[in-house]
Picture 1 (cartoon, one colour):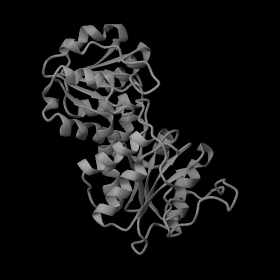
Picture 2: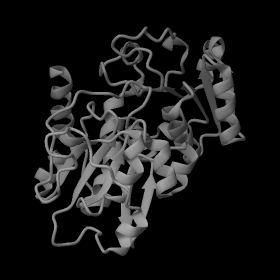
Picture 3: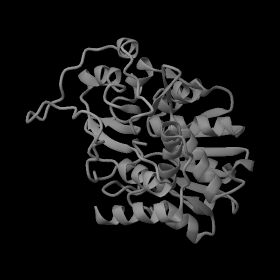
Length: 326
């Protein structure tokens, strides 16, 4: 999950699977030009085979800020699965070619991050979530087809379910921001049946566009009107970068929220944002951005490696420790 919510992190070790070719020209540091289409790759019979340990990757440009390898290698190790997960820096002009070469390189699927999420929709068969969000972050092969989804929706919902069971009993939610992360959040809220979703953004036109996309029950809100809506909202979600390290704090009075309201901040650097700290001080249930990052990785791992992993306290502690070191 890479988004304007500040879900960025520092690269760990570059993990390269031993059974696949290195994707760059020796000594050049540049990726080899790729012109093979996905259809031709499939025709040549170069789909990943059972005899080769499965590998997946994260594709981005740049792709130097992700903790996905740490997460997926933890699950591979604890589940006893032979496999790999690497980071692949692919410029936009080479993205389509690289996707076509996924099977030949031994990849059974991939995560996709900035700036390739929208382009991925054109190269694969997207599901309803990816289409609605307008971006794909997970690719996998099924029956000779390349499929795409957006696991940010699943990660958002699963994190709230884990941190605040029963959160979806509310009728109204307030979403701050109108970018890619907000699209995933609004889709998830509509999927769960939240009757009224307010979308507040400093540029009201973006909130209006998002409200038009999702239709009835989705209401654009001018930023200066946030305080008026807070008492009605059973769920508050911040998808902006406000409160992130190096950014201004989110100026918001949580005292105006209902006593049973839930506050979710997608920012995870820092983990304990001023918004979450203020909400907890008032006794409100909270969910942080790291939980969404961990839960959104579950579906991709299951699709690629055939086992559904668990988001454990040990995994969270591992990633938290890495966050504090970088």
